[in-house]
Amino acid sequence: MTTGSSTYGFEIPTASRPGAAAWGQMILAEARSVIRDTAGLVVPIGLPAVLLLSQAFGTSQESVAEAGDRSVLEVFILPITLVMVVAMVGVVNMPSFLATYRKLGLLKRLAATPAHPAMVLVAQVTVSIVQTVVGLGLALGIVGVGFGLVGPEDAPATLGTLMLVAAAMYSTGMLIGALAPTTNASIALGLLAFLVMGAAGGMFGGTQNLPESMARFGEWLPFGAGLRLLEAAWLGGEIEARHVIALSAAVVLGVASAVRFFRWSR
Amino acid sequence: MPAAVDVSGIRKRYKRTVALDGVSLTVEEGETVGILGRNGAGKTTLAESIAGLRRPDEGTVRVLGLDPVTDRARLRMVLGVQLQQAILHLDLTVIENLRLHRSFYPSGHDPEELLRRLGLAGSRDARFGNLSGGQQQRLSLAVALIGRPRVVILDELTTGLDPEGRRSIWRLVESLREEGVTVLLVSHAMDEVSRLCDRVVVLDAGRTRAEGTPQSLVRDTGAEDLEEAFLGLIGAGPDEIESVIESVEGTS
Image (cartoon, rainbow over all chains, first blue to last red; front, side):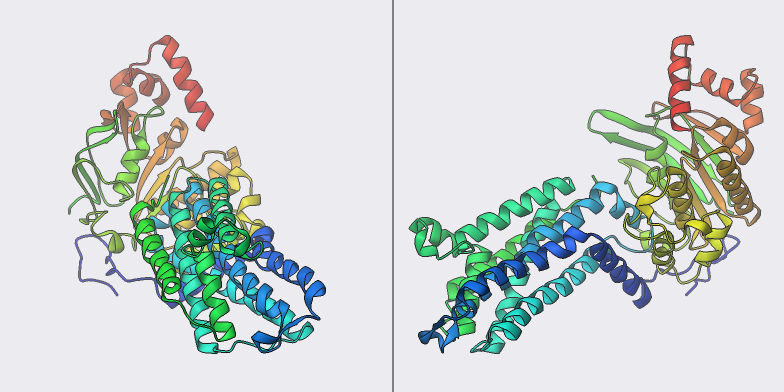
């Protein structure tokens, strides 16, 4: 751990990356920060669940014969809810933490320690993934326990789709976190992106009610592409390459832009 | 033995503002050196350049023979930095913040013991965001010291502290000197610098205006105390002296 340097009255340790204990403490710190930020914890998980429940009581008795007699709730509402959870955590919640840390100077503070500030980004993404899983589990649990969940036709494709949607949303969130100078700016940008992607992607109802150009555009954004892909995987429909391409492009463009524009300090 | 901190002719410009204009500085191992200057003199830029948080446009910086930017990872193992603004995780408690920073180092102080030494034991479970300015400042110092650094950079050490708090922090810095730790102290507080520093460097408009022991600066300028010597050295006229004093008092 130390060098043979005896130029000074002590040994200078060799450089070593923070170990498992440091990573554990960092992830724990981010988890505590998210849990103690009541709005940041409850809204991305609770709001989609409340919307799901409000829809559930109105539609739970109906079923769709062409979809294997799955309930209307499972066919139309659940996929929207699942994509909504991923989008709210990735696009609204996570970037607000990153913008706050930069605004406060926390990333600069970490740069003065052996911990690279990138550690806090990785830890925040890790905690956000856990938060997303909890949100998805809650939505699935509500439908499963109270309203008869048949489940996905193609489970591996569904899981793969959710992971790709999450990657696309987190990449978009990283870009927002890189561009937003303050917490408020991050939340405003995140909500705007969430609402635009959601509205064009079918979050507020079928895209057949939208102008055709908007509906087409929405299918190339992460929410719309993710929703179409998830519906196809869940119901055993055809996976369209353009939706996979759209989500993959969002990942590549989001990450590349975030790396280009990210600043560690104000 | 080479100097613990060796700064040679560094220049740093922010757009049209020249923050540092050819500053050189050496600090021997175990020495405590104060950096004095009015607001905007370049003190924090100098401290952050030595800490590797800023890259000078020209000149070289070596800390324990290492380049703070390219040898960043190794130097951070023995360098403790207290930034001008006390910034830690707002929603973590005092002890959680300190344990987090302790985990970055292979060895270091016991967090609980350090909190006792800094008079923060009673606030160990309070969230950082709920602490007073003085408590935040003390925790920021604890974070700088948690890894048992051999070189410490302290920017505005006692800003926001009450007299009792300042004295307890001063005793801690004196104990660092007894342990042979090299300390670079950026300060506006003349009493603090007089008490703690072996040597003082006065910066003005990004340049070194004077350097020496606190006693020699007072003697050579014919002043009554360090504050008067400082004001004389930076060439503050009667009107300017008042504004400089206000800026000094406002940050002390």
